[in-house]
Image (spheres, rainbow, N blue to C red):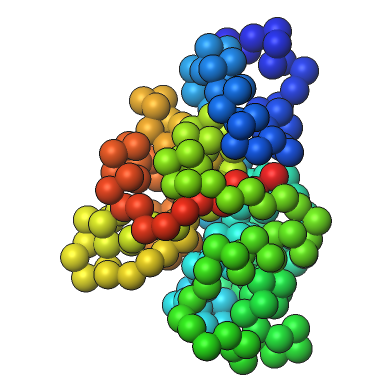
Length: 216
């Protein structure tokens, strides 16, 4: 049931532009007015996005988050075609450039001397498009996601998946809940096998690697 207080305003619009304090303040209202948060998550595969596809969870998560937040992403392809391997290669490659990970004219070249990306790189790409990126502690970001915010989470992939051989940091995007109150996550590193799945708060906290970024 939708409360009259929230009916004229989508959950995404209500959260847009709010910092952590604002998110905390509205959390109680959303929890009482709607049992479960809606989700606009999409599936984008980091594999097939160019020479650095195995490192592209960051820019791929940024594309996913931007789309879920209702922002325009240049060259984004929706639906089954976009979810396929390489279906959004151009959008991810351009996001790499916005994040400062590759030059604009050559996505096969790295402009950084480290593997993957940092949250600060992703925030740079988000802000370069005119969107907002708000840094949060992991647990705060997780709870914001449960209430409808679009959040990039920095996780330890192996601990999240329960796979001992997946020993590396990873970025995923969280937004909304399923009918049982578990948080929905789009995983660019397992787009074909997992896509969008739900995790308990305990599972996500067990997989925590670093901070979170709220995209609006």
